Length: 465
Ligand code: HEM
Image 1 (spheres, rainbow, N blue to C red):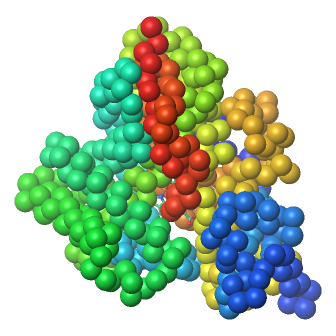
Image 2 (cartoon, helix red, strand yellow):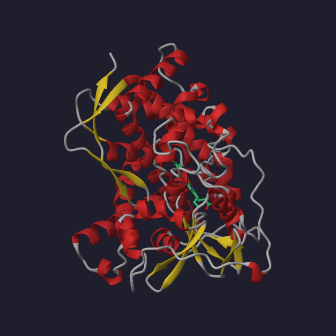
Image 3 (cartoon, rainbow, N blue to C red):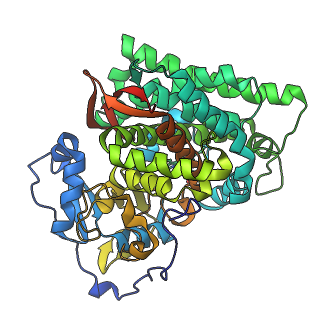
């Protein structure tokens, strides 16, 4: 495994399976539904266990969510076919609720020609050869984190992980020293917005969220501040007259399909659509990496030994990341067992099929990278934390698309190299400076939100010598 790619493409793409409509079967209905609510109550009560059990019912299964039928895809091969097929687009309740809050014109929710154009604009900032330029900021932030933490004092991993994730995304992609103060505000606003967004998605009480209650007011304030911050960042860059070679300049100078400059709203929504997924996902993954360092001291020691063998004892640098094979494998294995993005949805744009099953136009499809990446049919001892399963001689046993935490196809996360580089560097910096212990009051149970993260991870850093 390399930082370039979590799962290299070594097999041919799954082919679409053109069949006569009459040959197509109706997917089986998953068991355990109840009148009126269907499978909804199970999905709300224990979504991870529910999604993980679906493969026993079939490769594609029908779920009843109230009156609505949703199709769940349960095998790695079919999730790959779904992500790569043009018969499906980004849409469905998850995306609608994101659009309502974060804006309709950003890359994460666009489809068709607009989406292709927007990807062309943002892609250069995330290309493999663009990442080394971010190296000094990633290094600075990783070491600053270890310096902030005082031996023996309790670290609240949620706020600290969020903080470094936002700072790295904002400082690397939007640039400028003024980002230091803004990154703090972004961080606070995003934490509240994400909490509220998840609540609104799982408990859709519509008008109740408009009442002037303290949690609603806090959510609205945070959302307004997020949008205000983005406006400030854009206005300040414009006023500076500078055009550094970065993502913000690319967005400010982007042209639409007719060669006209894109509108203000699109610029705004694009910045939101990049910074928001970028911070929550990385922050959640850092929390799980801290958890791994605390709960698997043998791997923490191995990471430390690897880093020291590469650096000879000097502080780890961005340029070392490529040589840190075991550290990288620890990151990949943590992402396998606790993928930040644990559920994804699509909508069929036409009558189509998946694995010989009929999927009608307009149907919502759902799949869970969490379920796929923990499946015993794909991984030996699937629930064990075993970074060595990513060694070159073993990685070939992993079925294609059984490890796609950044997804595949045209919606693949643009930030896979950017994320892997910072996660590996942060893990290396933390493991060489400290051992970690959970302290009383820490709750490492999985909290299911827009991403997966520990409920409240509290750690005590203990200096290594
Ligand atoms: C551990 C880190 C991350 C993980 C696991 C992750 C995962 C994902 C996944 C699975 C998708 C695809 C969604 C789909 O197929 O429907 C996605 C899309 C996206 N991610 Fe990430 N992501 C991470 C970090 C980031 C960062 C750091 C940024 C930006 C700074 C970012 C920006 C985006 C954007 C803009 C999209 C939408 C792409 C499109 O629709 O074309 N992500 N991410």
